[in-house]
Length: 197
Image 1 (cartoon, rainbow, N blue to C red):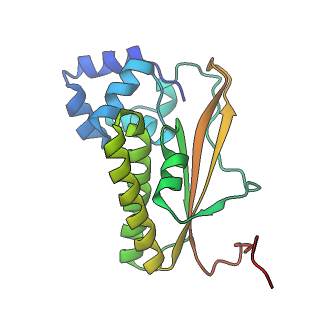
Image 2 (cartoon, rainbow, N blue to C red; image 1 turned 120 degrees about the vertical axis):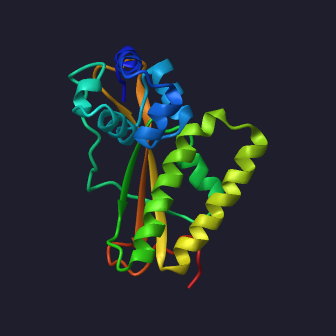
């Protein structure tokens, strides 16, 4: 989504904050702040975090008031992701993120789901800034994350869509949708494509 980059710079200047200070207060990475101030492009989560740091309504940061919110669509089909390289393809460079999950039943599950969602968003936001070697290491880390989720009974489902938003020129923008779902969730439809009876 497109934010008013000049407004963000101005608000930061009025508070005499550096980009690094704004990143710390908002709980986002320095690279995220740098990218937003340069391009105005931000995920919904980053927009909310920055608005919170400035103690203002997130819609006040919009570059265009006609821009819609990102909302989940119940009818989308998510596919299970079992490899870090595939997960990186889905989240890397996305302009917005949707996260959903089954309810955690323990603090351990809540911590793992929270850290997983945050890691996926963070890697997605800085993906284009990574060099080839760093991307290989990230895909390994994502594979380990998938395995860790599986040990607690969660599977990763994901979908990448390209969506058009009024007020943003340039066509359709990539949106990564991630669902961290219990492996025994009755909503899962198992297809045995390619398997013989």
